[in-house]
Length: 327
Image (cartoon, rainbow, N blue to C red; front, side, top):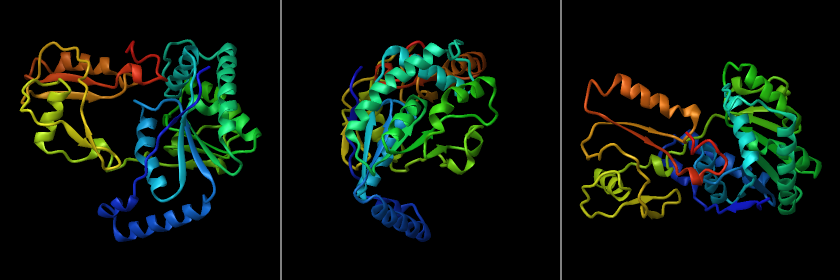
């Protein structure tokens, strides 16, 4: 089994939020920072998930963890590994938590055995990195099976589920039952909405944390038209380059540069003035890019000159999504 890997996390001073918060909000933030420094002194906060690239959790951790380090809280990020069958099972879990049948296979006893076997190896590696007093935050179903061995080793474990549905169906409930033996051992369970919290979990251990959007993440920076044009040409989406450098600002404020073209399959080239319908997402059936394509063909192209662009990450970069290439 491959080893656990650590993602380097930089440090960013959260004082930048003073430009977008009210005075009262800044005071609340300063108070929270002071409390965190005192509470977590001498401890490490470990975030554990299953990919460093491509997914929403990876994007969130990339953007937000540097703020904790920027105020002196020792926050780190580890990525677990697994074999192909492990990620087939966890993708099945992911789909079913959304109420979707996915590959239609259901979750078997063999799936549970393999899921636990892989995570037992990963837990043994994790335990060697942690010290007593640390706090471990596990993200999403891929990590849920780590909860019992880490709790048994004496660690405080929080599990955060970033997926769910307001009106669960039988597929979702069946998948809860698959995960509940692991999840009920966590000190706290965090969900994005109250409606996402599962039946069978004690209410006093459930916390609702709304999805976090960083106004200073790379994709939220304001960009002038010249920079936009330079990036579109550097990535190979349009041809009419004026020679400008394709640069952008990273999360930590340092300059970045586009150095690689995108992999593009196209019916025709785009120009800077081409009307465009754009979907950006992971290559996930739940994002329904095929539905977008069919809707565009059936309802748009006969009425205007717009083009459709479906954009997503390289499927080779999203290690925990075996359906990406197929989609």
